[in-house]
Structure formats: structure tokens, C-alpha cells
Image (cartoon, rainbow, N blue to C red; front, side, top):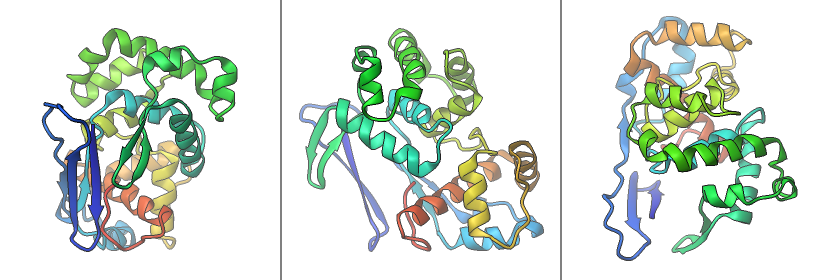
Length: 250
């Protein structure tokens, strides 16, 4: 296990082990520069806001199981609702670890998920997600090691084969785990919401399909699509935490 701490003043992400005897390689943050953003003239107001973030530093999720669980808990609901469900589910059923910044809960293990009753899910607001979480837990115990070695597109195809995991969930989980946001569901409500909030003067499509088509026209190259999506989600992360305009990790 690793503890990642972002220091705003230093603009530095530090990663330290919180588990004795661990021999795993320390996860390394990924850096995405504003230079990677596309430059379509019509997207100017949005890009002007995104560039203010500076370089985005992101630590890819080192746990595929955590990425899948998080994506399932995001299904249907808003980001704020998902955050509440995530905290409640992890806090109730995950292992809690003492750290220098307080007690932090880990993702409940697949075995724990399979042992939960319907009432157990309902008590923390995750009754809607119970079937998908159970199916994902069974599949992960069977094929998790294989999945973890796949590239983003192959991983998405595997995840879509699990009951209760559709293209949106598979794409979100794959992006979180691999760090490649060119495969993120670009028509996602979060992307649309933050893009519109960052540039309220822009007339953006309201439907997922039309928005995604516009997004891909603005960023035809894969590195551009990755940067545009990652920067928009990072802007939204800052806004949720009241830190708009400051560099942040996503």
C-alpha cells in the first residue's frame, strides 16, 4: 500500500509506503502538459480555462479492482452522489489503514463483496450496485491477474463481458487503471458538466452522442483526446474541492 500526498505550495506529489516489508515497485505519477491540449478556435474559452491548471499530475490507480469498484459506484448518479456512496461503502466494509493524514479505508475485497447481503448493500446506499459488484467480484477473482496485464482497449472488451458492466463503466475503469483518458467515455455527464461550467459561454451539445462527436472533432489525435478529457475532469475535481485555478492531481 502507498500513501500519495499532494503539496500545493511545492507543486509536488510524494508517494511513500505504509506497509512494512512491501517489495512492490513504487507507483510513478504521470504528467500531462497543457502543450498536449488541442487548439480548435471554437473551443477557445474552454481551453483558456484549462490551461490555467498548468501541468496535471495524476497517479494511476494501482488497483484494477478498486478502479472497477469505483466505476460501478459511479453508475447513473452524479459525481457528488457517487462520492458519498464511495465513502460509505469503503468506510463500512473496507480495511481501514492508519496514516499520517488520518485513517483511510481501502476498497472492500472481492471476497467481502461476495459475502454481503442485500441489506448490507442497502445500509450504505449501494443496493442498486449490488448485482454488478457481485458479478465483478466473481469475475475478478477468476481473471483479475489476466486483466491487469491488458492494454486499455483489450481491458474494456473484457470488462464489458461482465454482467452489470456496460461500455461506460468499462471505459471509466480502464482509464482510471491505465491512465489513458483517450478511452474514457467522453460523453459522460461529468465531462459535459465541467466543460460547460468551465466555459459557460460555449454552446455545447446536450446529448452524449453529439457531445462526444464534438469532443472528438476538437481532439482528433489520441494524445489530444487524452489531454482534453483529463484536463476537463481535473478542472471539475478542483471545482468540487473549492480549489479552482490551482494545480491539482485528479
